[in-house]
Amino acid sequence: MAAQVLNLIPTEKARERNYLQGKLAFNSLLGGQELEKVLPSREVKIFVGTWNMNGQSPPGQMNDFVLPVGMNHVPDIVSIGTQESWPEKFEWEVSLQETLGPSHILLHSASLGTLHLAVFIRRDLIWFCSLPEDDSLSVRPGTAFRTKGAVAISFCLFGTSMLFVTSHLTAHQAKVKERVQDIRRIIQALDLPRNYVIRHKSKDVTHNFDSVFWCGDLNFRLAEPREKLLEWIENTQFPLPDHLPHGYLHTDQLTTVLSDGAAFKGFKEAKITFPPTYKYDPGTQQFDTSSKQRAPAYTDRILYKYRSAPLGLRRGSSLNPLQTPVECLAYDSVPSIVSSDHKPVWALFRNIIRPGLDSMPLAAGLFNRDVYIEGMKRRLNSKNSSSSVVCSIQ
Image (cartoon, rainbow, N blue to C red; front, side, top):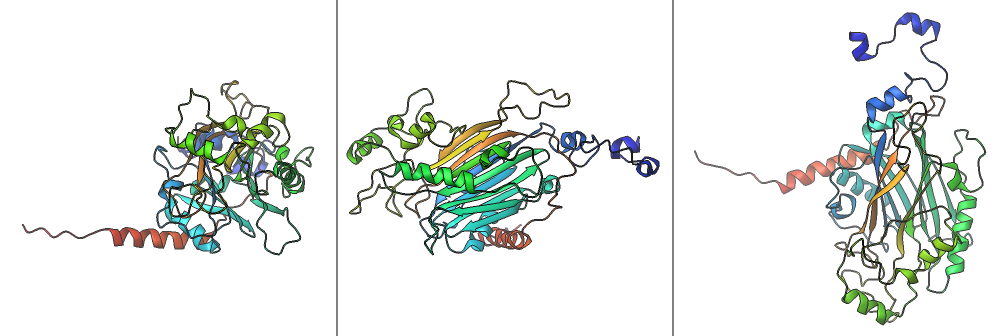
């Protein structure tokens, strides 16, 4: 009975080396039995957030962004991409860690100029991750101060490979072709994965992973006059009902790019029901009143893509064959944060996970210990400072 409960391996079998049946063994670390034990539903929830910070420090409380109301549980994986990031990158990562709490650790982070990407994961899942990798590209290589380009992080969880990308594309209303060119350059230039072998590695980095999540300030605009957009926003109640068509999304440049296949082939986006996230007067809820008079736009977006072959349907899986490997459960903005001229945007996904190969280079439990310890210190100090002592006389 003890052997059944604890899954003990007899020494005799270990000597014979026959308890491990090939690379994808049922009893292996990344095999089906361990997957069923760690993730009985064979799926994870993934949070993806994007925010152009306008170079400003974040608010003291990040709950509205990282732990939004309506999200019942802390997701298993949290990926936050920022553009025009706050220069204090360590402080930003600690702020995210403090918000998430001790259940999650910073698996990996990477930056390029003012671009930053951080991936946190539930700490009991770090033993089942491959070694994370990152890559980046500046689409303005001649400039010393890198503000436009992309940063990517990839890894495997059990046997499902994931790629997270954040990017900041060329600005201005008329430069659609330049933004499309940026996307094509990024997709061709990012060299991932590198540490583990895959069949038929593609020059298109998005073809090399089971799930791809791309977020950022993509800078696509609405092709409508500013006055018309302001009037529409003023007379519209958000969030928009799911059954109603979006007022001006048919004039959105990214929607057109996605529909005609000019870029982001195979990517999807959940329905937008929130107001435009750009451009606000910092510190207010008012759209740009400066001399530039920028028109409101949905510059901040989250796209996703997955392999057409269903995941998790191998080796006798009982999963529904009609179930998509990735599903977007929520997509929203954060109007309460006013420190930037952009509003943060977040999305919650369900991602199916399948068993993996023990030959994969494991992360072996590595994570950013300094960020974790500092985040926990501040979380504890914040809790203590907000509490009060009440003396009652009996």
